[in-house]
Image (cartoon, rainbow, N blue to C red):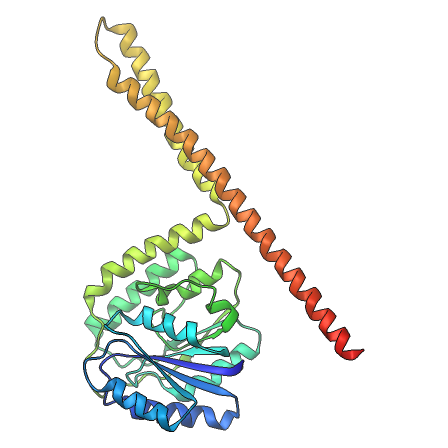
Length: 320
């Protein structure tokens, strides 16, 4: 396993590829770490892949992954993370707005014991109305909903311990919510200010059209974070609401039956039965969720104990 992997998704960045590669090499080589660089071509329609491949032919430390079509930044990052072989993973944009000179600071912070280090763009060089203001609102909303107050969720320049990031599923726009997902496992998260440069080439691939995707992903993350460790509480709460609704509906049905003569109460009776059945179903679902969660934790702890025992055995064997 290598010491460091740097991952950069690319989409129509033919003018930036060489400059990005050179900047990363300049930042990493003085560290004297066994490293690799992964460029993920996200279905570019220009010469991005050809240029990146030519660079890889000259430098074996550079690997290039190519998508057949454009899937988006998160799938590109996920592909790079899956193929990375470093103990520490650094992700960054491929448009030269992130500065590779900040990479050593991420490595140093992870060396202090943190699992994830998030960069926040101290002097962001983007348009105010279409980028800065929506970003500030989104960061505030994500922090309130998830309970993980990250200053700049949209900054791609982040550092991870490989065992943490490879255990987090990524899809849609999920790269923004990695800290929130990692918080479920109790990961230690730090934030550091990073430099940010104005785009030199091409056009931004981001816009207001992504807002609805982020909102949907945020709803999903809130559900996962809330239900992960306390499924019975949440399912029990919903079951209680259904049960109360069923009881009230049944009581109303009885009162109507006492006061009226011959009125059809089939709909009300059916509604009461459905709500009661839903309450029972939700209770069983909560119990099942608790069982899965407890069993999963037991399995993880057992595996950790086994690994620790094997590691201790190997160390003793080497000493002997």
